[in-house]
Amino acid sequence: MFGFLIGTTLLLTSQLIKGQADLSPPVAGAVTDSSIHLFWFCVPDSPFTIHFEGSGYDFYDTVQCNSDSTLKWQSPKLLPNTLHNITVFHNSDTIKHLRIRTFPLGDTAHVKIAFGSCLDIIDSVFLAVQDHGPNVLLFLGDWDYPDRGYPLQDTVFFADSFHVVKQSWIRRYNKFPLQDKALSAIPIDYIWDDHDYVATDGSRHYAAYYNTSGSNPSVTLIPIDSQTRQNALSGYKKFFPHYSLANDDAIYHSFVLGPLRVIMLDTRSTKQHQFFAFYKSGNQWRYDSTLPLLMIDSAQWQWLMQELKESREPWIVIGSSLLFSQFFKDFIVSLLVWQTLAGDSVVLASIALADHWAGYRHQARAILSLLDSLGKRRSTVVISGDIHTSAIDTSRRGGLYEVVAGNLGQWNSRLAKRLDSMFHMRPWDIAQGVDNDNFLPAFGLIEAWGSDSLRMCIVDMRNNPIGCHTITSSFKVVQVPTFPEADNTEIICSSTECRIVSQNKWEVREISYDGRVYSHISGKGNHRFNRRCKNCIIEFITREQKVVIK
Image 1 (cartoon, rainbow, N blue to C red):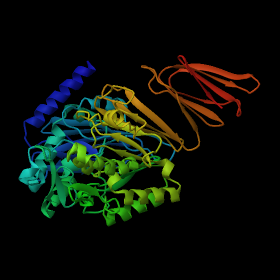
Image 2: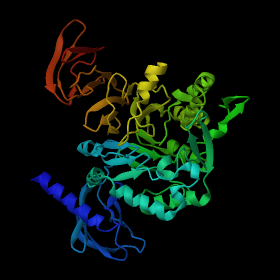
Image 3: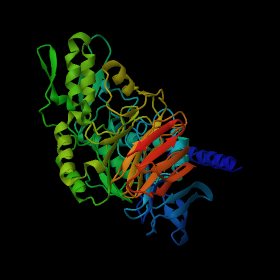
């Protein structure tokens, strides 16, 4: 019956919204420990009623839709970590019911972030996202593809028209019904990538047209004029419930969620285009790795340095639409070696790869140096998207821990599998297509237990973990080899306690070096226990596997 009621409510809501071309369901964003913001497209100049319950409040608020069909609403001051029921009415019809929780306070809070990019052909992943109950959902770009239908060879961008920008936002909120259901309970934040900013490989001044037809593939830079860029910026600021922006000329910003400082970068609208590092010498393309191109301009750079220096939270999460990994910096050059045999297609691949932080190694190196000087590299995680697959760098071979979630609703690029099979390269320790055949749409999940530990996962649309990794402040982590049903079992031990992360049966024994068993416990699922013997060996057994921690 509950499922029937939910389905009926969603159907009626969608019918009400579709009856008005410029309507969209309300969404919650810019949530903090003390406030909630709502945004929706509405009937111009008409009244709406909001029923708000929570934090000791129970009131009705009547608000007027603006003449441009938009409405933004901010709550009064709220209590932290408190669930709020919000119902929006129009002419006695329920437009949307939301249940939104304010963020918890303090470094000891237990929090979750879901994230991903590249949402296009399917939105089933949001059923799994909602099952995890994250505090916030972060879109890392290519949230729908509004540049589709605007061929770059025609030098026309969707953002040339502010009206088209507005329509792209209306479609974004209405196109995905399972997204809408999830956003009834999860607030959102967002940064763009190229397709939802202006166009392919978009930067501050240029986009790139990759002509792959015929025998001579080529790249042409298409100028982005200042008004087109301004239309994109104005759309973000006007049609999204965003956090306070650090600069009116870009969309970078930050917020705090319990023990996490979340830094959301604008890696599109202020960057210099990577193509300027490529040049032709005779008949061969070359790459100038010494050219100090800027992924983020000087204003955003100074802001980022300040954010990293001033952060007092145990963990830093950096949201970037583009891969941070420096693993690929030499591969940009290596690809060009093959151009005589493989033709200009490998040149295009090299240019496309240089679109990421590997092509902006000077700024990437400076970020790593600063984090090292601050002692924060090990407690910093990058989350990124763009590449239409999902993976985790657990060993920081790319410079930082990084979780890539680039296929919320997009065909899988199978990039990790291709790199492994063609070049014997494994940029990521966990990846779709490497030691598995899982190419389903997926999302990223970060879960932090205060300053104690942080767990990063990639999860598919069927809610199956593809892989997880836990980092801790002082704990020793052992990942147990997984079985089809093992769901990434881990045991995390310090000198005083152990924490088991599992969905399966397990046994733990504490054994002294003379063979004495100090404790023997068994169970199923997640569990935390105090150690009885500080210097004992820990035996952890799950199914046929036995792991010993000395």
